[in-house]
Image (cartoon, rainbow, N blue to C red):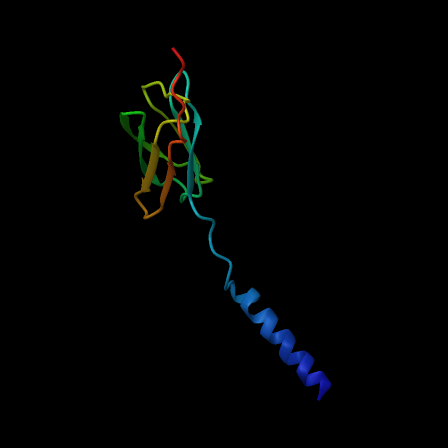
Length: 117
């Protein structure tokens, strides 16, 4: 009887692992990795060779680029405007892939202290 309980426990634990249940593909992500001299966005977790539309809104500026992910699902996109590393600015980065992969990064502005005259 004890043997059957151990066997049942082993099957209950091993079955989901063997079937891949609970092991999801990593989520796609994006981040601003550089502000100056231009804004550079990096992403990963996309499907290999997926065509991606990347848009950035930062400090009142907006840009869109089309890129293709590498075989590992990563990309970098350079935008033709300088960012402002000032933490008082709202940032929105959105990457949408042609195979359905999406990633969004938002940063809310920190409370800003006015400069003294």
